Length: 422
Image 1 (spheres, rainbow, N blue to C red):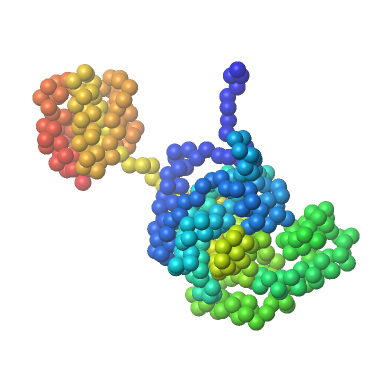
Image 2: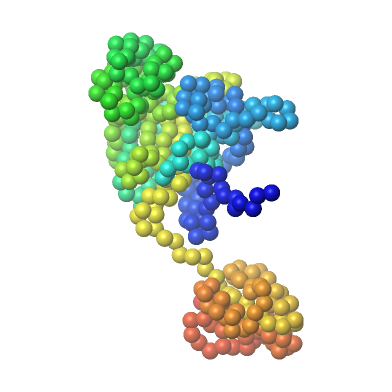
């Protein structure tokens, strides 16, 4: 057997304790923010049937064609996939458990997603998202609510240089008309299409609009616009979204080339972008997906949602210099001796019963070496227990920021520790 040191899979990162403090803080802020809008938590499996994502996302998409971690179950041969995104899983769960048709649902989830991409800053093979879905709401008001709630979170986090891009993809009839015109247009300029665009020409021509190839930009800019095909209903919906965003003082830019990488979107789509993360500038994206419930097998129902990338948001916060203080320790318990170790353990539990944060020294060592660790821990109080103290059921209380050490009985310990900490 090889003795080679094993390492994490490329693109799947450890989150170490100092960094995890920032994650925990952000997750608490995000949950409070979501609950303030009436969104409730739902939790779905990491693994789903591969067919779910093929049907929901679209077979001719980068995610399904290139990026999914898919495999056959070794026991029964079922085709399974590590979830590359959360919306399809959420809709599947809502349908499976019949949550939708009695009342509309506002739901959120969080956790890891998986895509086999080339790892770089802000793009990893295991990445984390908060996803937000509102199912059963047809009007533009819910589209606006989700965009406005994002703006509120950015303000709450103090994020700078974040801008909103907005577009509409209309309804299916308009997209079909636009699709035919796109194919005809791109066929006339076939000599300018790169290999990826040629492959998508007849299967998913709208995705060519999202190409970043510099040699194609002028040609793409002159392509037929979907906006010219929109019917009255979709136009009115989009105009109402814009009007309500202006009412809420949320600035935006209309980007007609914003098409999103998932086939299930219709009408409103949006992205929150920053210039501070290089090519991975999208920190949050979403839109309306009224056809997805029917695609997955349910009775047609309107829906809209978005997802935000936790790694990218935290990278922005760290870029702004955010550093959280280390976790506070109230009391460090120092002990030496056979009787002392038992009393130290009991005293530590009593303090925790009173909601103190307590580090109980483990591993032995002299009083001197233990006091060094107590000092390094940042504790505000050290308890010193030797066999002498243990025999009389007493504890020596030493304030770490200066002050006289006191020896008190265990029954008076909480009152004494409170005095020093407060």
